[in-house]
Structure formats: C-alpha cells, structure tokens
Length: 376
Picture 1 (spheres, rainbow, N blue to C red):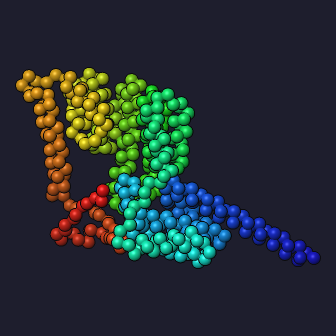
Picture 2 (picture 1 turned 120 degrees about the vertical axis):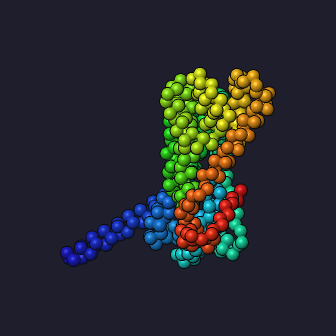
Picture 3 (picture 1 turned 30 degrees about the horizontal axis):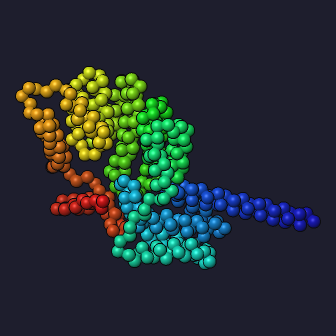
C-alpha cells in the first residue's frame, strides 16, 4: 500500500516537474522571439538555445535559431552602420533548420526556411535584409512629430516607446530627444538622450560579432556616446547652464574627433554666447568644412561668420570662406595620412570569405597590400 502511494506521488512529482520544464521552455521561446524582434541577438540566441533543449519547443526554437543565423550569415551587411555578414553562421543556419525539420517533419515554415537558406548557400550574392515595414512605419510616425508643433507630449512619448519596443537601437531615443529640445522640454530631452546612450551601448553589446573588427565596434560606441553627449550639452546650453553645456559638448567633440557638423555648430553657438568670437569662428569653420549637416544650420553658421569682423585685407566674404574651408579640408587629409606613416600595422584579426579567422600578424616582415573598400 505504501509502495503504491509512493509510486503515485513520484508520478505526480515527475509530471509536475515535466510540466514546469515545458512551461519554462515555452517562456524562453517567447522571450527569444521577442528579443530577436528587437535585434538583441546575443540574448535572443541564449534564450532560444535553452528552448531548443526541450522536445516540446525544440522544432520552433531550432527554426528561430536557423533564421537568426541565416540573417547573420547572409543578410546583415550594412543593415546597421558597421555591420557585416558573418560567414561562420552559415553552416550553423543550415544545421539548425535541418534540426527543426527533424524535430517536426510536418513543420512547413521550417522547410521553407531551410529551402531559402540552401538557396542562399548556392547563390553568389545575397541582398541584405530590407528594413522591416513595422519599424519604417514607426520611424515615419516619430519623424512626423518634428513638424507637428501642436501634438501632445504624451503622443510623442508613446511613439518613442512603440518604436523602441519594436527595435532596440537608440534611434528613437535620440530622435525623441531632439523633438523634445525643439519643444523646449529640456529636462525630458536630457533624460531621453541618457536612455538613448544606454540603448546604444546595449545594442552594440548584443551584436558585437556583427562588427567583426574592434575598431568598428569602438567607433559605434563612440558615435552613440557622442550623439547623447551633444544632445545633452545642447539642452544644457538652452537652459543657460554654460559650464555644464561646455563639458558635454566638448565630450561629444572628443568622442567624434571633431568630425560631427552639428556638434561643431553647437560649440560655435556656445562660444558666441560666451563672447568668444575667435573660438566661435573656429567652430563654425570646422563645421562648414565637414560634409553633411542640416541646410538650415549650415546657413546659420555661414550667417554667423559673415557677421563677424575680418581683416580689411581679406578678400570678399565668399572668397575668404572658400579659402578657409579648403585649407581645413586639406589639413585634415594631410593629418590623416601623416598619422599612418612609419607606424606598424595594428594587429588585425579578420574573417575570410569562407568564415575562417585570419590574423595579419603572421605576415609581419613581409610586404602587404591592404585594399580597404566599402559596399555602399
């Protein structure tokens, strides 16, 4: 009798444990899908690998992993700045999708994904994945608030949160911070830029392997941090806190190596407000010597320069400005080239087209020709 009761209790405990494990696996599967939708690949993969170990969720998890690896292996080139395809994931994509079909031979979506991956493997070139329609629509909605001066602040925050939930890159926070600055919501803008900074670092951390070279990932970290610092600095300037504004704007200049138009323009405005015309002139000229920048800000920088006194011997303003900008551009090119002359090649660990690591230190002492190119 006691033995029978013990067996029944053991069966109940075993069933409960099995059900609990299945529930946990299902939760990991749902979590992994959600994380991948946000393009947080490292955490998504970890969750899906856990789900793949349970037979009740194995087919779905293997398929999802296969789709992630297919994206990483063939479709992520320049989807975000600095990202590249990772050929080492291609075999893993095929293996995961085959595992999905083996776990559930009737799973049509896994069969379809496997067929697509096999086509990618046989193709000479595969186009990068296009932006998702959902993200494009949310970006467009958020951008529309730049010109919607009467829109409630609550609607702007809702648009930011919706876009951030759809994809975890920092763009909605930085766009939102600028919209809030334009609205005069300066404290909220600062808080939003700080959220953008955290999102930027996390997004890069989650997708570190996509950058392939540490210099690219470090550059991406710096760009995100510079953008946040500049937004915060500009908001502080508008709050009339010049000392704090200067610290943040100079931090942004350091992170961007003084190569960001908007930041240089902001530093020019700060210097002019502090009655430092020579410093303002330098920042405005630096800004205009850089490519890009919103046309209204370029016009404002030009107008600010034209209002500043110049030597009587200087040529007309237009001729003087062109001479100054050309000189700065030439100096920047010369400095970039000089920084590379007579210096040893930094250690580069690259990935060959078939996914194997390649360390250039093995070529030390030999003549090496490096051809740097971009695909855009």
